[in-house]
Amino acid sequence: MHIDTNADKPIFIQIAEQLEDAIFTGTFPEETKVPSTNEISALLNINPHTVLKGMNMLVDEEVIYKKRGLGMYVREGAVNKIRAKRQGQFFDQYIATLVAEASKLNMTKEEVIQLIERGFRNEHHPN
Picture 1 (tube, one colour):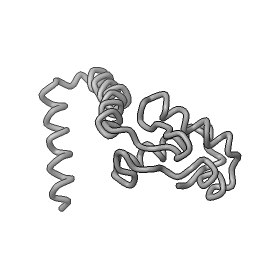
Picture 2: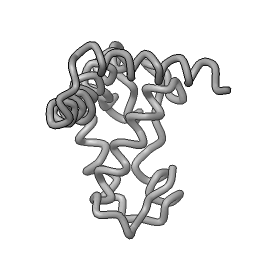
Picture 3: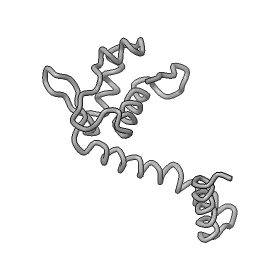
Picture 4: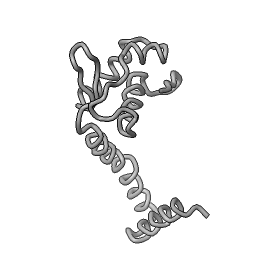
């Protein structure tokens, strides 16, 4: 984990996003323990309350849960929940913007699709 103290994004949100990403990529599989608030706090040299605030965001989103006396664990189904959230964000952040810009450029749907297909071809065969 790495925290950018110069970023506009609050530290607790950075913590939540990085934990979420670690869960999504399988670093912390479902039903396994995540590092404690104190462990993350010591690792990153930040206030434990800030870490807890970030972790509580994931509790509220039902990605992790607390086992009394044992710590925080990744909830079963967390990866699918994160994927659904990110797909919604993908539409909002990329697709809606893409369609709006294509409209300004008077591009047709077919022209946009051709560009997307070209992007996928280039990604799979870069040369």
